[in-house]
Length: 313
Image (cartoon, rainbow, N blue to C red; front, top):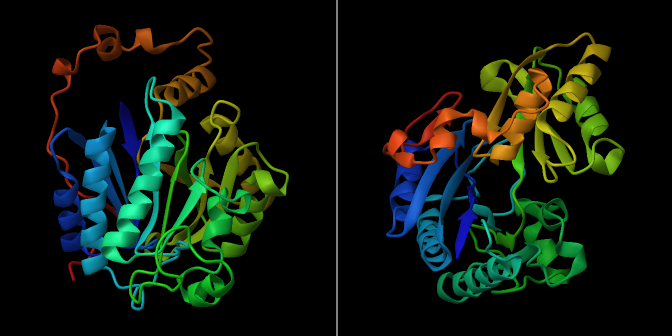
């Protein structure tokens, strides 16, 4: 059974560490789709897919590397984080049931805790407590507040105290989401914060949208960082157009946007249908997809992709 996993690491500057993570993920029966690091967030996102057992083994190897090379006592970035390996979701692909992804998440959590001594919280569909379903709730307090939090809220697996340099990991199972960032032509973080609040589903915005304001100083502008966790209900065009409309209230324009990781084909189709007004457009209109053979798109060697300024350290 096939799954996708998208572990997020609290490192976006050190290209050597990212290369080691990439190498650790490159296992038999696992396809490494990409590794993207962001300097301002100080965070990287790895995407792998393949047979579930093989993916579980590959992710465990990347976690071992992260614990050796990422020290949160010296890590600074704009993105919230609870651990060096901040979050590890398993996403079922095709006909793979969610129950299988949940089993992988819980097995990885047990292995990481028992063999590496890293505390693990389970989230989303793998959560054993309803208050841990939402990732933002599990991450609240971040690494700096973890020791105090664990005294009252111990992890699902592992010791009831943080790993001294790696904190704790959040591991779970979820359906696909789209990580989508919109940059504004301003350096005023307060504007991005007001826009993020207007877009965020929990504050009355769009269904299935999580949004944060980020100060991406190396690019000279601020960012509305979004996760579209129910993209059939809230499409990319719908999210982008609401950001654009809200930005206009403050005399600000959308400078550009970026995709982090990958997105489902249906999201691309929705975007083409909206902006080109092609109501009957579908995947069959794309020649490579119509031919349905990856021999037309040879696999290239994956290299870490860095956004913003990159330093080797």
